[in-house]
Image 1 (tube, rainbow, N blue to C red):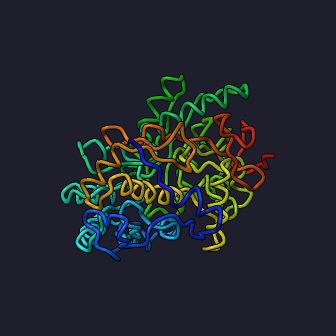
Image 2 (cartoon, rainbow, N blue to C red):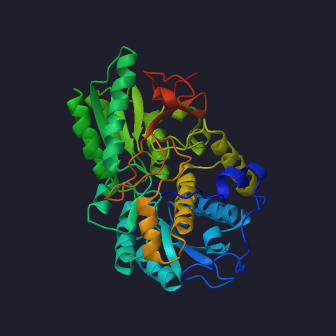
Image 3 (cartoon, rainbow, N blue to C red):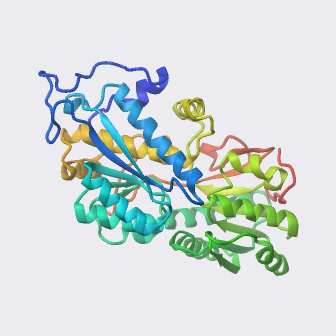
Length: 420
């Protein structure tokens, strides 16, 4: 049975991280101290993200999101079932390197972390998940899309965001739906993707579904996000192919470079269409690239800005860190809440008990989704979906499906032409 967790969402955000009360203090005699938690002891959660390197901006956002969740839970009285025990976040810098993520995960577990969240890059998460499984410590993946991570039969690894298969499949479906509704069905699509497991798996899922829907795919071009400095050559090749749409899967820095190259080459596209793109749906993207990013789409997991509680979290993040919140930070926030509620439901800080509570639980989310976070036997969130967003008049708007839409999609959307 799912227990009600009273901490962060319902009360704390509404009062700006003020305590709600109602939980016993740490070590109170009329409340159990909880298995594995001594009076006054904090429960440690490990946060593994790229805090340096090319993805540092995203990694710092995610670590900030995890930290806000820990603070909210502690201010609301901690874990009531464990005598009001407070959480402590142990942050580690993966540097975006799989071997560093692996060693840092082991270090955090040795320092007492009962659960981990992370890690942004799929290659890093793949290594961290092996450490989590070997040590039987739960890992709640906030961001990492590669299907292969959860195809190993793991029991201690769970993913909140949609898998690559869901992202790629829905991305193709949304493109077909939006373009057909506009009376100009997309018929030919070029794909530009980062070469790792993340980009390749989304490419494969998108291609299978797009071809089922009657689209022709090609050219398909891969790149190394760590070394790429310019996309003029790739965009020139795409222009020569005369395709309707360019689908792009990659990280923030390379997304900015793609927009700059499209603006220079002018490939004559009906749309630039991100599929789980790490740039096109972020508020920082139109601010950085200006008019060059107008009309860009992105089919991606995203916080649901139609929810008042999500709007409040965005306000709080801006106030605390002087920056607009990215969806990665929201996923990290949700990941910590999943662990906290599982500690509550388990009534124990034992890692196996927490794992079982995660597997059996049902958790509210700030993401656009078809329901609460519920994990299947493979550790996938059954209700995770992407939504379609578009840069319109310098702002990212939710445009499809209709139940999540803040604005109507505009298609065709010639890159760089203002969309209102």
